[in-house]
Image (tube, rainbow, N blue to C red):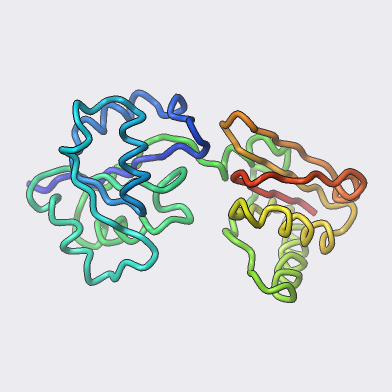
Length: 233
């Protein structure tokens, strides 16, 4: 009998283990094998939950954006041995802007049961708190790096937002927060509504929605904390 592939939500802010539901903690007690982007941070996360007698007994394998799909049969081996296997994202929910989707696709292709567990998602939490359209929205991940390409992408997304009445959601690595905000304020129309969500569920949490013109008048300096940006034209 095959084991189950569990999708384990991670915290999205430093020291936020209190937001992990009891149901996740219960499921974790049935899992001793994990796939993770970074074994060190996955081990630290599970240790912080204080549910295992010893983390040393837990087995980890790396699954990241560079993982060759040919390695998946070996990575999924515990499931064929009747053991449950957990996929842990570096932040938030596995499979959403996350290489955990590789394991999930493999599971579906090979008749393995997939169980997603409830946990924090910065994308949905930012949308919930934005006041923007939660009926029609799209997540676009990271913007391009090159300046000309990022400007074109922002303007294209704004046109789509206006045409479809659709909230556009993007994320960014903390060290690029201020650059991305500059690009958004330079390329979006003054009337477009922009939400800046910083350090969701963390001690430095700040979520505000203003028009682009309002942000231009009082532009914040964003720290190097996880950020989500939403806008609606």
